[in-house]
Length: 140
Image (cartoon, rainbow, N blue to C red):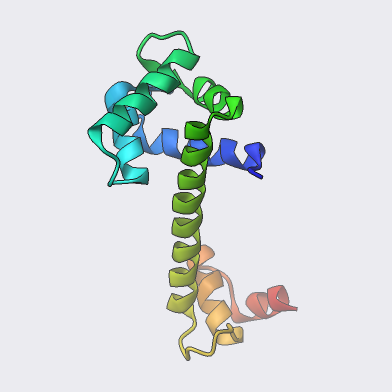
């Protein structure tokens, strides 16, 4: 079961990444780029079909708003469900990978946990002016 509230946020991230002209809508080229970023193995025909299906949900002007995209996903066709799974896999994995990489960056001894000194490094990145005393208080 796909949580559509969660999907809203994920779709918003995709829109912000690929809306090159900041119009609040994806034109067919921007949508194509977004689809290929989710699955570089999509065929030209598959991408064309997705663009057609999503565009037909809205006002058929060749521009896809966030609302039109969400309406298409909520309609629940098999194609929409398949695309939801791709979005979840891509955004979920990329977020998890970024967090793992970030954690490893601060886990200097490779223990899998962050001690006070390692957490101090995290806090100093977030707010460089923190003193060790303030960091220790945050860790309590």
